[in-house]
Image (cartoon, rainbow, N blue to C red; front, side, top):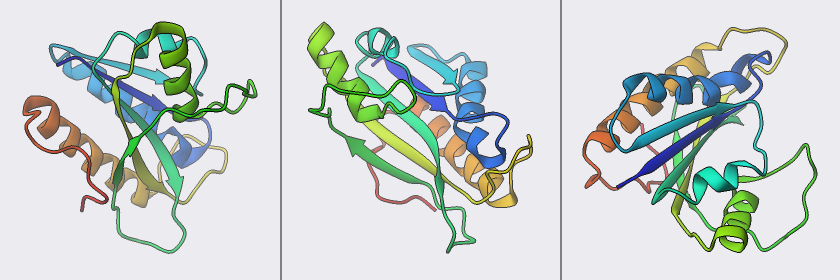
Length: 157
């Protein structure tokens, strides 16, 4: 099994950096058959990296105003049909569609979201995002070391 973890977010906008940090930590683990990329935003060139793996996990912050619980969400993704994009807004679904069209590759894909409440300028995570990050890393470490665990779950506490 080859896995690519792509964490993304603005590292200077508080909780938005959480996906980026998760990808950095996964890279530090240096697990066999696992590659991790931390980026500020998704870009078309990532399609080439996605085409080389069996599974891709996108990691991002999600605005969570009503919850103080650090629940993470893991959901399956399918390729998007829309071939247009803005250079500033590329979705994981668009990248999956681009990967299919350009390389004929269709890896299994998931979006792991971490709750976030503070997107102000700064480099600190809120306690909610920090707790969510810890949950996400614990879950990824467990799953990457034992892929028989089912990754696709609505919510993990």
